[in-house]
Image 1 (tube, rainbow, N blue to C red):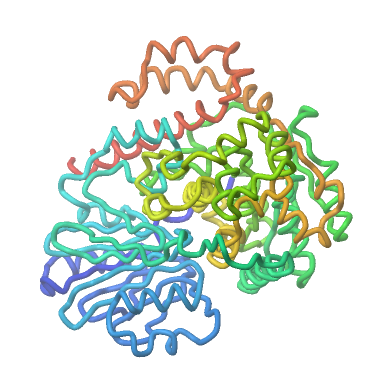
Image 2 (tube, rainbow, N blue to C red):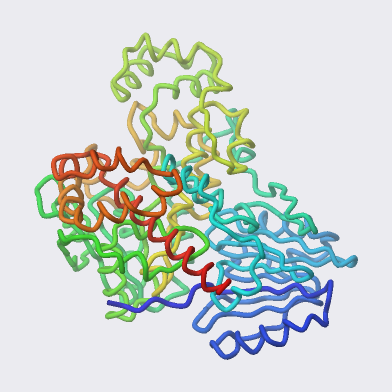
Length: 573
């Protein structure tokens, strides 16, 4: 099994309030002893990069630092930020004229510090204080334990939120006294915490009355993103699951330099309903790719599969399918790949959700004439409602229909949009979970082209009823990418079903899962009901329970909590 890389890639130390803090020398020595490298940063701010971190660092002007990959849409970065008089202006220019995976830090003439996290959220950004020092990092490296907030503890109410809605992990932490900058936000560091403002507002890209881009525009937008991401790597792999989204990515990669795409992999289930090799082979044959088919092993969960990811800033929910995660990570190491492409996020950007409230979007855009008999019939058939029910939804007010308790700022910003578009933006916010920690992310870059800023902006601009025209999920995208897809995939409507696969894994894992969860920290702290778990964790329930992922998620959260209890205990020992 591949070894895990050290936690964290970058650490910024703001020492401007007390440049002579005696802890600074100790911290520098500890970091350097563990392979961290010191880089030129801003006045009063030190930057350290972890051993093996490949994040580029640029200082386009004396008061601005950009960590990570910022890609210009036109002019280069120095020109883009030239003349920007404030941190807010710099952030607006960076977001408007480029895209990528980055965090930007600005220090103004008064010493105030502001931090921009790019709109994808692909590079995490935590902020905390250990007075008078302030820290900014993508994770919480062990070496900084003594400089974490004195009152740091696990927030069990947030763990309970994760259990109820796992996507909340992207917008809230289960650790106290640490804050994160939200994607697309600019945060100003103050003595009392962060003051955040939305710089990249997804709702601003929707134009209900504007012209509808041709499918060729979408194709070229995605192609440009895929080519740009691939250009950073000499060797990469891609997965061909058999579904639409991964087929698009594979098709575009196949049109580039073939020697760099070193493996196309299909992970399939043991039972027929979870075996999508027929579709994956059609994609591979269409583009003359060798397909590596790997059966997903049916074996018990191991605690070390989760524990090895450690007590990170957030639970590593991208590793919930531990055997797949380990197999692809091993393949990347064996082949010397530095990146893995995925089709994740396609269901959100291309609009896969079948909800009848799409009728409200249609009326919002076209008025009553939009609720034509053909539209009502198509939407009714797709959503399994009557045409009358769809019509009623289209005729009623829609402003307050989609409720969410998520703290993600995109959701409040999109409140005035019609429900289908709000749903899409909520799905895009939730999809940031795909950038989380896992084994394959520790051995190479996880590349999700559909969650890039250019693709999100392009698809948010398109009305939801256009994306799902004719009562068909991904209808607009199916037409846009028709030239690079085999018909069997382009016309496919069903999906593989791995319920039996994961149900069997859960059954085999019962000797571990029962004591882990019934006697664990989550139960002891009121997050889980031990008596209810006793009834749920039985072979009969786990084999055929459609909510198979919930049990594994609970195990992952339990292991994460145990790791943090141990880490905090060592800190105070």
